[in-house]
Length: 143
Image 1 (cartoon, rainbow, N blue to C red):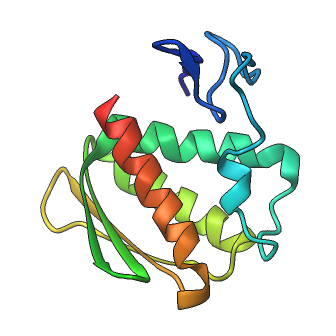
Image 2: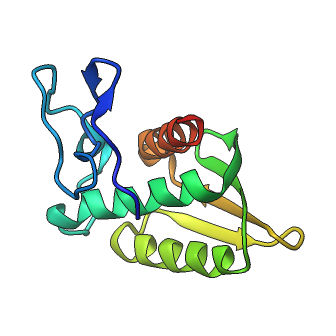
């Protein structure tokens, strides 16, 4: 996994890590808003492990995400591309995420060689979690 620099112009992104470390960077404009704000109480992943899981999703999106499509309020599709290990990595991450956040339903398919489709569905009450995940996928894909 690759650590991200906190410096993006002159502001800090709250959920980013200091360069080449797994330590969250701080600056004068930093607030408590960040990825933890959208993590529901239903999530059973220990708080200390949440930034690492978030980084796993970021790494997946940076390395492989080609497109995102919001099919409905509770359904996000992420199109991924990459080597043959992408599918197994996606399946493993989806399995582990479902273990701690049972409200997620993940579907992983391979529409053609070198492509993986990740469908993520949540009940209406957790649409804000899907909103945040979509925002992360879009943001890291463009960075």
